[in-house]
Image (cartoon, rainbow, N blue to C red):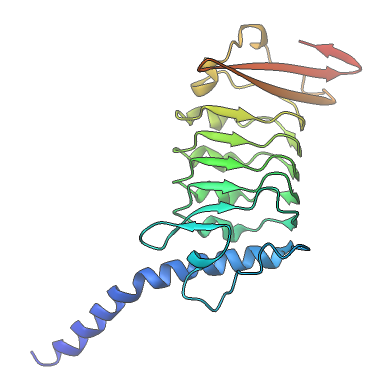
Amino acid sequence: MARLYPLAIFLSFLLTISPSLSTNSEGNALHALRSRLSDPTNVLQSWDPTLVNPCTWFHVTCDSSNHVTRLDLGNSNISGTLGPELGELRHLKYLELYRNDIGGKIPKELGNLKNLVSMDMYGNRFEGEIPKSFAKLKSLRFLRLNNNKLSGSIPRELTTLKDLKVFDVSNNDLCGTIPVDGPFTSFPMERYLDPVNTTCLACSFLELLGHGSYFLVIYCISYGQLNI
């Protein structure tokens, strides 16, 4: 029986430090993000990886359990790319990266952020397709990816996002079939039920908000003609 006491003490120790281990992994993820970014104005100067957790860093918000719930780097004059490590921020609710100069593809690992409520990454240089993994973001209400260089079509998988209220992908290079199911049914899509010509040169999606209702206006430039 006496031999069980050291084991019990060791297990208790692991339970005690497990929150610190978890939050430190979040700190590692954010530090990896910092290594990918150029920060000429030292916005990320307080991001010290030697600290127990990132909750004292500027532009990072944590909950009472020291889990990162918000990342506010909008309009911060940063550039670079995003990496898969952001998918480790499993408690993140708000990802604000708007109006910077971040490029490259959007990591599919962002689909692991199952607590995410808002993703604002407009006004950057993101390219490639919108990840289908975003369909796993069941808590997502606000998705703004406008004013980038995204291509391809809107993933039909996004129709499963029942809580999605704001969706803006205007001023990209999107083409293809327009989803009309799920949250997209609240848009007056009667004029756009036919698939958009997949050979179009540029498509844009503009969202207009009025008195609690969301409206979607879509146009597609194809061979120099405006199709609406």
